[in-house]
Image (cartoon, rainbow, N blue to C red; front, side, top):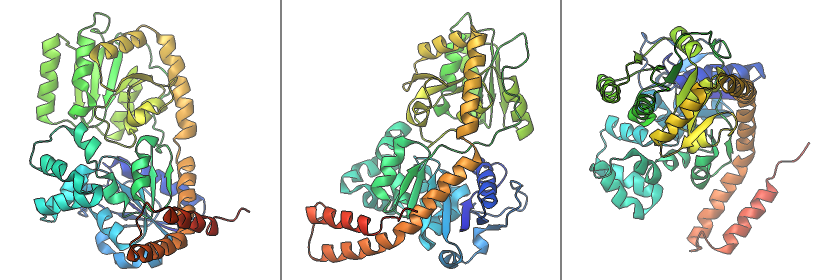
Length: 434
């Protein structure tokens, strides 16, 4: 197949890192792959992920020609407008297979409105078009600041469907948000675990040292529940001697807030690294004994930090919610999705006191992750969905035409005859085995 792979590809993009590995795997399977960068701006100073494949920026390309130039256009979708601005234009220019890395994309939607100078009327109109007239009060509440809780927004207006309805096929990284894609995307929808390329982290427990290290990796925003972990550690005599290390970008405001929480509970071993390069991240993972990858609310389709914790062979603590709740129960340590400090403390105390449990669970998690999260398996899943997309294209075209005719007759979507017609079309266009 001729594949156009749309993705942010600057070095600081985690989706770009995944894309570099998956496109290499697709090319090794004989596909012709071109990477089309979708960042809003093409900054020459920004280093890119290394690849042997051709790379272009979307602003250099005639988007109207993509449908003819490629068999499939695969668009990676994340909740960051500066990284994914081009993806929105490409979805309107060609039939696309959308990979939804985040199930909550309200920030992407909001960024699109802002960067295009669109006002509250367009905001409300897009939400109503996506969720129906009954969603209008929620649209007003969220844009006027009456609805500020991200969990509530994620529950009512994640905007997943806003882009899923513009995709010809869609891929999710966990089952919890697949129904949203299925409800909005006319074509095939599949679920497959995220690809997470293995790092240079030495597998297994770190060498003997005086102090156990608990580590959280990623952008340090409040929904990572770092403050709750600090309270859990600070309230335990068994854990106070541990170090808690934060590795990833952090704002000055969040740094000050977390340092204040540590001072409040009398915890003196908080280490905040901030943003680091890949080499330092490898080192910090190698030094970790336990990985904390908590989230509330869960906004992403899958978590690279949780996957990397498992790949590194470290016991990983997650919430029983969203993607995290779908991880095998015997390979991670789950706490309630409400993130209760006492439960976090209990799990960490258990892990801190049992080195054999840490080693055993970490080794089993790494073995599972190596088999499940590799680029070759992911590329095969993408290839299978792309073939299903191409097979379904005639069915979708005829279905759209018949649907238009039936609506002209005043037939409701819920009419039994519509279901019978749909089932007949599926039989007519079913793939032929062999």
